[in-house]
Length: 342
Ligand code: NAI
Image 1 (cartoon, helix red, strand yellow):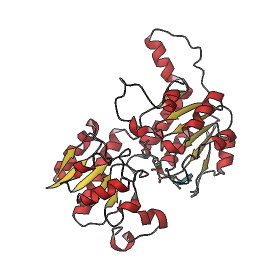
Image 2 (tube, protein in one colour):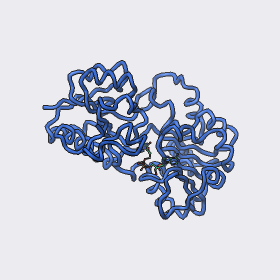
Image 3 (tube, helix red, strand yellow):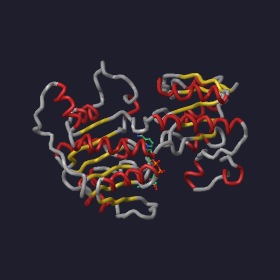
Image 4 (cartoon, protein in one colour):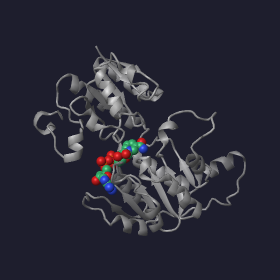
């Protein structure tokens, strides 16, 4: 029976993975620790590693996994900015779950927007304290507002459909446009949008795509929503823009330094990250802990595709969800010819 080392495991992962792994005939060992240089030795003796968004899969960890005899890492997520593909190439196959529920993430983006806009988070605490006043809770109609969508892939397009349902005008920026969407330059998007939502991956070209310069181009009071990756936004610049009122509200499901905090209970500890603490202290900032994916449907699909990916690997079937440094860098690799990247 193949043995799988499952890192950064949470109770809700086990609910979906355990029954499926039994069905497939694999034995999963759940490790609560994140995968990193200190914990990688725990993978010794296993046949595969399952990892998540805040695990560290850099060169050191890849080399250590390789020395431990691991030949496949199954990412149970879509994004892969935490993976050093060059270090993994020809040593460790990397598979992922390219799509599990674009609805989960897009709907969470809308939930952040509407909670912030209509001040639901503040109203909730007031009414629980029998304070039924409305001062300071005024929002705005979404109908008629312009929303700028950066990245019109699977999630961005679902988000656009929802926004159109609200009667909003949608404009978008994406270097790879698709039909039926009104594209503009990034600069025009910043200048024209009342709300901006980020749905592009984190890469060298998108790192800090929201920075002092792009923030200064935006309409005063713009609402920013980020459910993609934290480092798309320069958080220091965001804090300044919130302080000056340039940004009127920020709904963040991700944060560039989230690895040390998100998915952990830090309630009894002093937060040492001054930027995070500053953001948390603002009434017009709403932070969730990288939970946009967290729906029943998404978790079910994540578990199913991850087990299918592992099963395909161990049974020499085509690895349809494999990704390597050459397919992401040159748009072509051996997978086209031999069903595997190498
Ligand atoms: P996708 O690959 O379907 O779409 C990404 C889009 O971004 C593509 O259309 C691509 O052309 C575009 N893009 C690439 N570079 C760009 C640039 N420089 N500027 C603007 N657009 C650019 O990906 P999908 O499934 O829509 O996911 C988007 C992102 O959402 C993922 O990369 C991931 O980081 C994030 N995500 C967050 C989750 C959460 O729980 N918060 C869960 C799942 C994904």
